[in-house]
Amino acid sequence: MAENKTKPTEASVEAFLAAVEPPERRADCQKVLAIMREITQQPPRMWGEAIVGFGDYHYKYATGREGDWFPVGFSPRKTSLTLYFNGGLEPHTERLARLGKHKTGRACLYINRLKDVDEGVLREIIQAAYGGV
Image (cartoon, rainbow, N blue to C red; front, side):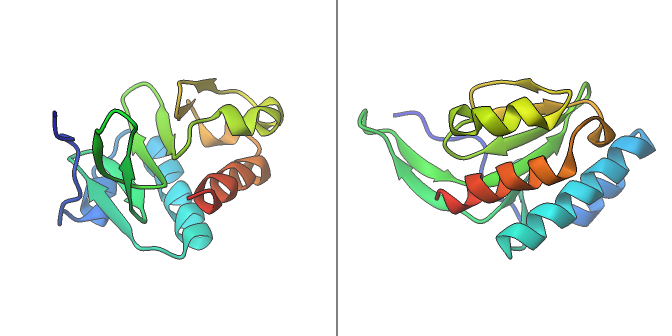
């Protein structure tokens, strides 16, 4: 069975975020960091080289695949700020309709700029996703 390539590291979250460009994306990351820290009451941790995760849990699928992951996290990707949610985004359909400008994947929310979305709704999604672990 293949092992997860993305694992928690001891790398500095602060150093990673300090290097994010452009400055607007860096500011958005700092805001999401503060929101996730407040909601989860967990310290941020680097997962791999480019993902900031909060908390952790062990999962095991019916297929036998298992591993460790985080309930909520984010990554400042080149084209968007990517937010990761345990359990996918299907449970958040109603909230996503109220969020503002965004795109989605199965378990990822893509936001170009934080000012394009409703922060209150984003907080609701993060809270629900974190509370669902």
